[in-house]
Length: 363
Ligand code: PEP
Ligand code: MN
Image (cartoon, rainbow, N blue to C red; front, side, top):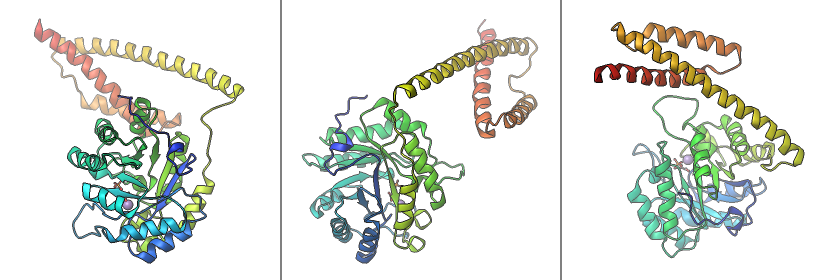
């Protein structure tokens, strides 16, 4: 599925150049907070002003958004700094209210993208409407669900359509609030090269000190822009306080980001082509080595089968993981990477050995 009919960001009609930078508070709280935040954002290099009006919160009792009344505060603040205003919508009524208030760009939040009924309701409300929409990834790492959400909005006739990568929820605790799992947005782009994808470092990081590095990584991966939450007084924000930055800090972050080019000059192309050939050679070599390893694993499988030994021997596996990790550290490979790589190799070995065992059972 790569046939989405999509208008490139530069033709959305708001003078957008890459990187497209959206900023503003997590939540619109008061008219003054919205206006002051916008005014202080004015010369920080952003392209659109955001704010949440309806906040889908994990637990009831948290601040669930100021509601419809705040839409006008957001629109007025955006007018004041001559930028488009963007807001999250989760229901057909939200779409209607946002359009009536004069919002310029809509986005669908992560908790909405997980639910096809909700996305369809938003899509139905967008039929016959001319407004750009961005679709955040669902909170779980499911690329099909993300693409399904984009497709529903596209089928409603929305062509100024983009995606927002805001990381994925996981039970396991990491330094991120939502694991970036960059492979998913990269795969989204590979399958649908014409979809603009912006990255939301605020919801990926959960804390403000990680925002700069994740933003730089997003640009280095050639994504089209950033959505970063900013607030006039981040520590006292009514939602997502620890991840918001002041407008001035946002400006510093933006100015310190290095925007690299995806296209190279002739010499650069040659150099890159040579290095890529080396990578291709190494990858092929790695596959051959893996095939050889599996060949030996099968022989071990035969031995285990003939001697009635179980496939998995925990002590041996422990020893493998520990020795390989030590070795890896000496070669400047991260422990996590080596662990994941060895896990994958081990799974494949077990698959081969199980096949050998079952063969005997079938005979
Ligand atoms: C937000 O942008 O404030 C928000 C609620 O984000 P997400 O849908 O990514 O959780
Ligand atoms: Mn937020």
